[in-house]
Image 1 (cartoon, rainbow, N blue to C red):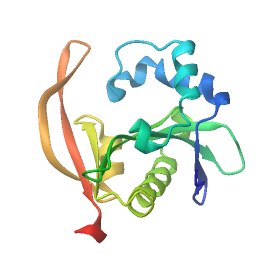
Image 2: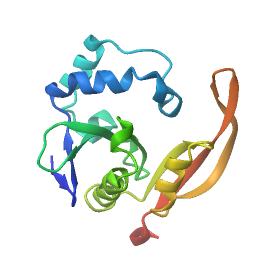
Image 3: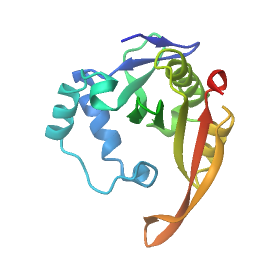
Length: 178
C-alpha cells in the first residue's frame, strides 16, 4: 500500500491495533445519521473485518484508510472508497473525523485531497461521488470545495429520530478524463 502523505496528515491501511478505534467510531450513535448505521457492531465483527482488510480494492470493492497526524501512528479519522466499480471507473467516498477537537482544522480537507489524487492517478477512476445529508453543511462545504457538484436530491431519503431528511448526490468527474 502506498503511504499517502500530506503536509500535516497521512493515510494508512488499517492495522489490527485499530480495533478499539474502529469499534468506537462504528458504535458512536452521534454519527450514525451520517454513516447510515442503525445497529452497533461487536468487537468480534470488527476484528473479522480487520483480518480481511488485507484484500485489495479490486477484491473487497472498498478501501478504508486511517487518517493520522504526521509523526503519530494513532488514527483520528477514517476515509473510505466504497462501491468501487472498476468497469465504470467510479467509487463512493466517505469520511469521518472522530473527535470534535480534530474537526475544522483542515484535516478532512487534506485527507480528501490525498484520496482524490490517489483515486484519479493510481486507480485511474473517472469519477467519485458522495451521498451527503442536506443538513450536513460541513460535509457539503468540504466536498464542494474540491469541485464536487450536487447532481441530484433524494427527497425524504433518510429517516432519523422520527423525521425524514433529503440527501444530495455529489459527483466529481476526473478533469483529465473529460
